[in-house]
Image (cartoon, rainbow, N blue to C red; front, side, top):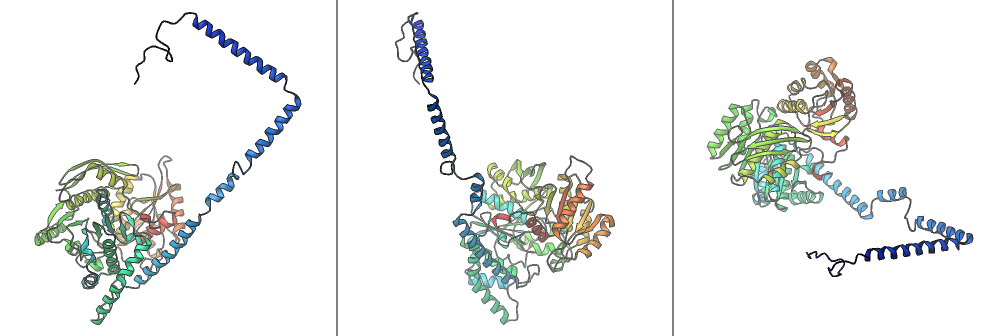
Length: 548
């Protein structure tokens, strides 16, 4: 920087003449007087004709400047033009529609196979198909999850943490909320239309050959879920991913996903569900689910019933796996509700993570986050994660259909709870986040514990509107309403078969019954993942993970 030496504009720094200021002022006054005089003379010589000529010229100039040639078209025209799709956009829309039709045709073809909720106690077909394909599932590392509730949310958190660490990730979850492409995600996004089609074309000849070989011995074709597992493993190998976070479809030992050798096995809370396929007691179900624990693996388990904990421990001893258990090795230290989620502090075997923003609500999601952190640490051989990685991953994570707000005024929340344990967890969260009037909109599958699920919602719902779902597996609305009346009482149960009308009716009931003007009433759509997907679509929510 130049040093200021006291001189002005380069004149030397000698003492100024005291008369210089007076002389300069006089010169300025003379100049200003002359300028004013010139202006007055010009005005005096300005004739009326010249003034009219100038005004006409100004008017013509304003007209030209306001024309569409200079100012552009009318703003409303601009808005209309802007709203029109560009030619490239129109072409892409047409291409997407064509690809969507191809995806839908593939999906409908796979739907002709045995449904995913019917477990076939054999891995032979999946192994045969993958072996002919060169075993693509061996090209990436795996974190494998089982449990009764919380699998998808936990899988999404684990995947987010691994991706934030810089790994290329795959994620396989089921069922989907709205679009079948959600089931297979790469780098946190639903598989593209093109890659979904490519995955099917890659596996189709091997699937058909496996079907033929199975038929030779009187066996069934590959099931719906088995085909999707094979497609997912092929898509992950093709991507390629560094690690895949794989959620079982149902169970463990005989689940089609269980042809992988996962170094980390995660067990979310195990409770009664799918009893027809997995067993009538929680111990029988647990014995099936621990089948994902492989030799030498790290087992991260949620808090379990004592009898379930013993089954997990016995399996771990059998195969030489190491257990990290909630309550002993990991735990939520504190949590506070926050707008859009909660603030949590978690202790794991490797570290304490303080004041982490989690964009999911409910105490159960905080516990799921603890499982996810422990699983991610185990994947990195027990190394703690940096605070930035944890914060960035968990503050941005989403779990569509899990205590998700899909509309305001009135507030409409959707939640996929579909069994008693899930309903109990959701009911706690609703009391915590929504202290006002709560009205449920419910439909359920006929093979679920309907009465047990309704029993946990009864204390938190002021009323319930029962509706239908377009599937043969769903319980009829009137039949469900009869059970609901036994639980809630006659006056608190309403029936509206159309879902949109049911949501509107529930909103009217909630606002009418809400006694606190400052507390927002809420409508809760729950009881089935399919119902949640239908509600999201009606409320205009985009399909999860860019699958729209």
